[in-house]
Length: 436
Image (tube, rainbow, N blue to C red; front, side, top):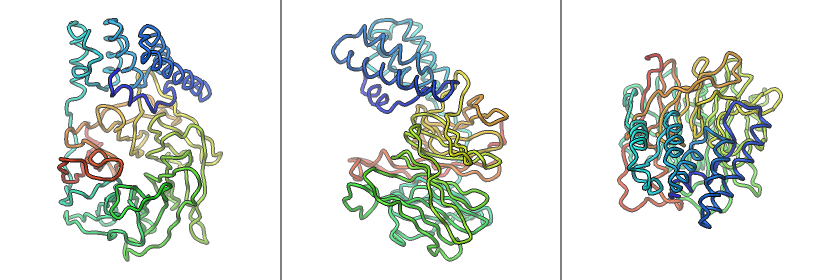
């Protein structure tokens, strides 16, 4: 198999079809087992058995792009052109893509007219389809933005900096200033940022990462939350998750109408809440679930009883905040919502930045009347190559602003800039959701 296929399949999780949670978990286990066995068989040179195993994995999880690519790859290696074309067609139906033209797994079937037709569909899915416009750019090329929020009272936009351990403010005229200076109040890398307009606070998540300036060697990085006064920039509240034997990484966050704050732990199966009480803010755990594999963005239902959480490798989860229960959000056939990072609610839909699948894009996930099912996925923006690393967005009325080009791929795992890298200017894109 190609290197892409093997890497993409390393973190697969659970079936994203319209089944009940337990059935879905059972399917996930079956799919993972079948895949692992198929990889081992392929490496031993038993292509026929690997082919059958990949087919079992796909049948258990037919909307997982990684399994689609894996099955198509093995089918092509087995010279089963019909199946390779059929499975790649399913990938194209989902609006996704794969570089089959450059993938050596498909060399034996490239001369087929049917293969060329499906390859053309995949190429079309990878072409730019921008509906957004450039809202603002920033001159500080190594800012390394991740999170974004807006202040509806002043019209300011806030961007976090993973690299420089700070938050910048872009005012309504486009002027850029440091709202929080580098390392202010011992900040580490700043990931998520959210404005609480009613209480005039800026909340943020902060994590020790190798990407930040002055990064100390630490085998078990710390992570926490902090709140700053929007007027004085003074630190109002800070909490660091107590250290334990497992890694933790607070990413995106949101603020409820009551002033409670929720954040996801991308490295451990935790969902954290900071409750606003008469005595001050108190941090606790909303839910711990084996379904949590790589938590990312989150959004509240209109009645704020359900918290929707994007899991990178599972899809969208629904957390009942009263019962503290977690279940996968069911989805209709032909829908793939894996790889969603930032997410917000827009009316009866969820807007997600799908950067864990190809192509990178912004999607709208329509919800059923009871909010328990995704009834359809619609592509809203594919602003490539400008939006080559989109991350998190913020909603302001009908306007959706999102970070287009973070820098995760420009640095190595040790936090050093890769040789020959030329950093782009950080860009915020604006998408009008009211326009068809």
